[in-house]
Length: 495
Ligand SMILES: *Cc1c(COP(=O)(O)O)cnc(C)c1O
Image (tube, rainbow, N blue to C red):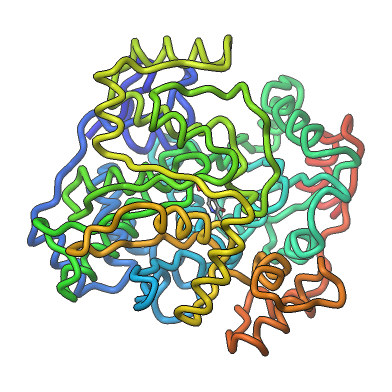
């Protein structure tokens, strides 16, 4: 099975697609054709442990890797999750949904499901394509993705990870999470500037020939851990198959009664993985794309017009505050092919807008339903679900739950609500929604204590530890000195 760029040409193997991340023409790698699992193969997943399930799906999608290699990677990756199964499902009787919890990883959000696998895939793919140098990941973060990358790459042989964050521009919990990161190959640097400065600085390093040459001399090659990397997308397909196999076994879904899936969406990566799973034979029915007040995808699915020329809202579900959903390009390619994609992407960057014709819009809306919820609706939903079922949603998952409430239910079908973060990660707003008072309304540690007492939840270990872990990273630099700071960090002169 080969991968091709959404902007035409450039056919490569799965290993090459992972090493490259993005195609040379700026497109994203998509499978030329999707493998389809037989019904008995899907059913058989239910009797396997999670690493075996993941290895089975990944083998179909990434044929350059052997089943044994993938299984070994998955065992390492998912051993870092809390509990005996990394992505369990819970039934909420009154609310009438089944929640797929994807937040039991080290950073308490769904990105761990993929970012724990990516480093192993990347390292192995590099070796397969003849790359022996150390893979040096550089990334700028506004808070969450940086920590997920640090946790994924930590102590992964043949790699290192350096994360820049804006000093004073992330929450106290986020900063603590980053500066206490363990691992011999992790580096965290505070930039005196804002997030844009940090991001622009990293982008500049990727094209700075002197810096690249210097890294090469030291046996290092630069890479990024972007959400458009195939190595992040493929592990996400696996948990949809896993959830489907469990629903089949429990009699909650079947191919003539497929489950509908509702996903809190930002970059369109998670929901795209669900769509791939459906195409690859999982018993999945309607896909519901849930947005917050940044409702560019809701409008797109309803009207066929993608228009980013609009106000940007900072919401209580910050990981969904996105106006350009980069993974959407992969779905657009399925609708229109490379020539159309090129045109649409040109209009989007030139005019901030593109539109589908009526036939294309119908293809889109035959697979996707959509809806959006603002912060007020989201907070009311947290309260409502807690009162009905005693279950505490984080604000991202609550957006999706609120959207579901506005849609007509098909009583014969199970609805899978995809939960992307632990409520502890967003404790203060969760407490506010539930009417739990805090002496410092921004203190996530106090919020965690109160959620524990009031709702009887147990605090996740990665959160509990934060207060006692020693600070290991103290490096700081100006926005002009980021290259020097990376070299110093990698050579053990700082941080
Ligand atoms: C990243 C993220 C999302 C959005 O996922 P996409 O794949 O970008 O659509 C939703 N919720 C949380 C908590 C996230 O971290």
